[in-house]
Image (cartoon, rainbow, N blue to C red; front, side, top):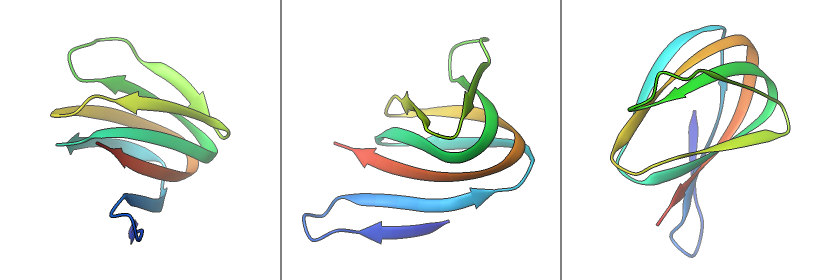
Length: 82
């Protein structure tokens, strides 16, 4: 992934995820926007896997983690929220 820091101090990461299983942790709340591809995600504290594809997004609470199962090459944009 590549971090982009804007003049107002906000940060986004842009990247590509290959098919596979991943776990990410975050200190700040995040908005995960899937630009292309398909995956399922499970937020920390839940057992529910939700499907998402290009053009859709999901929110991740601060001080948590989330699991991903990428089934198709995924292009994403992650915005860190204050």
